[in-house]
Image 1: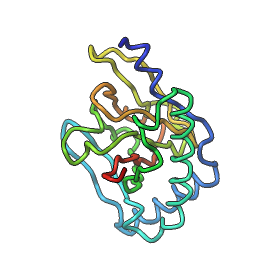
Image 2: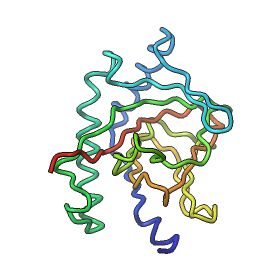
Image 3: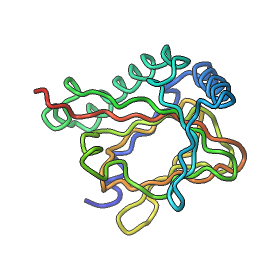
Length: 196
């Protein structure tokens, strides 16, 4: 499979979340962060961001259903457009991972090249889904690479934009440092389950 074919499995959807919803989540995150409710996720040489798990913070409980609804609807369209059989990606029996909101601080935040499945715990992930909650004019792009390290797709952070793709080893990607302002995003995964 060539790089061109791999990029066909990375879908970018604009306006997947409304501007009002995105801005509300950012305001809530900033308030929660000011109260010390955000976790710092910093691993030297890999990643640097602050995050909040929606399921662990009542401030975000009403935001879970709209995000899950967006994720499922876009996953169905993703599979239909690529003619992926239900037997290969059984959306009807999948679960989802807890929704995590991240803030990448201007000039600092990053997530160096990685894949979203790397061990037995994460092997249940079937599709990666993340939404940019704000537009970053300079920096903050998500870069996707082929196995030789060549960039096959660059995605600019744009308010409400969704990126959906397989989380496996064929799709290494990075979150670049935002330059013109902080970058906010939501992330989750559709999971395989043991139910048939």
